[in-house]
Image (cartoon, rainbow, N blue to C red; front, side, top):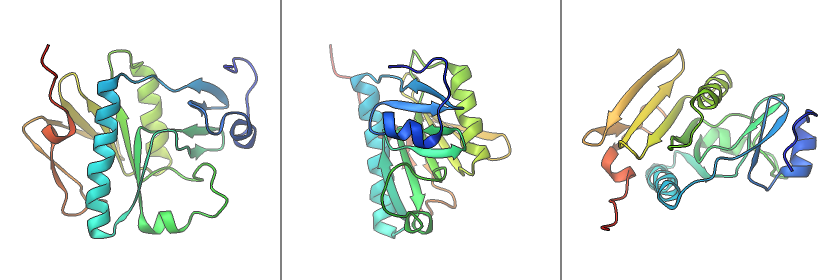
Length: 185
């Protein structure tokens, strides 16, 4: 099912793969990285914590994985979670397919199998398309690296508070809240 040679347009990709676990990366179809049980809990938990804060303060909308964002004319990315400001959300026209813009905040996961070169490419594409923050969650450490435009980033460790910045004013999320405790063996 993986398109190796032909490149697809956004419309062609959406018609064939729109609700399946694939992305369009510079015209080529690529499967989404599979997540372990633990990683899926982390991704969902992060999205839920952002959604709780966003809903309380009427800041925007949160979506989860498999939701596509057109970050360029030949690329649709599906973050593990994403936040859009209220203004951005209200600009979306029906019928809903992929979002015709980059998310304001993208949640990405770094697992033991993440291709770091591919991740760097994703980060670059998001930031070039207007994403204001990318949260890269690393459950194995645990820590969050926040990327912002201009090539800047900061690492937040388990004992620190992760601020929401201008996108999520008032948010001061304990990094430890993003990572579930290990089940005893």
